[in-house]
Image (tube, rainbow, N blue to C red; front, side, top):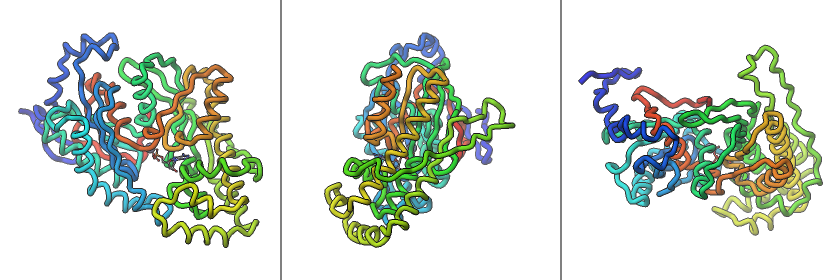
Length: 417
Ligand code: KG4
Ligand code: ZN
């Protein structure tokens, strides 16, 4: 048995590392060259996701059959701080990971032996949080002699849409496809093309500062609305006047001069300016006292309902919230549809935590329809972080035999290509 030495120096017998590949003998793969995934015997991937503040595990059959999807959220831990505290996130994952994986297997009617591969998020995300999922997945793969697959978290969000479209029987996706991944950590535009196995991506837009979800969370914090900010602002915005407060459109100077063409991102976003504008409005309009009163009133309530939060919001606050959301939605929809038109995109995916937003969904649906562009979103459950999307994104890699060695580590800024 010839041993492999990982870059961290530990020895893995090659026989063990590649055991589990036997399930996907070349003959079986050959017969599927037509790209017809239904011709393979059903294979089960256990997905593990720990990139931020959710510990999640899921089992997916053949990349399209959702057998279980378990998410343990750390919202209660981070709520007092108004945002994710990386150190706390890293400490919470080890507590949750074993029960979460066990529950995902049990709900799927599977056990450790009856899964075919383990998929884990490698990045981007919080390094300490990613490492918990990666260490656990490596240990499982090694002990069970199953192949291990690494997945980019952003590709996971994109595959959440694909997974649910496949479940609806929609296999006809036209390329090039434009994907807006908009979450607490990212606001990225990817142009995707199909490859023999899986898709390839070019990043044509990204946030220069705060991600859209981050802006929601920071604005909610400075208005004393609690954490996470997205759902509460989404619910309050419909009670305010979105034209009450004027925010200038974010001005990004695209100094792509000198950047190789392939690396240029002409559709960049910026959301830190609008957050500062909200802060200045609060100060200029003398809203500080009402913010503190609201903060104190809501602090004692674990998970206040929209009705309770509404009772603590005056018209000025509701108008501000509605105007903030309108400005963010205008920017996301405007730039994305401009990119879609200029790059001749034939399909649009909008995904990530902020894709759960009602106004964003309505506006994209309306505006994309005007141009005849099909637009798809994940369900609200699969918009925010989960492991079903990780297991689904791993399926093309399983078919391609694209397995990880034991020497990879967490990559906090992993790029998607
Ligand atoms: O995808 P996700 O769960 O985690 C990251 O990968 O970052 O996204 C979380 C983000 C948070 O910033 C949260 O405030 C935002 O998604 N979010 C929303 C909504 N639901 C969650 N933003 C706007 N409207 C919503 N309904
Ligand atoms: Zn995410």
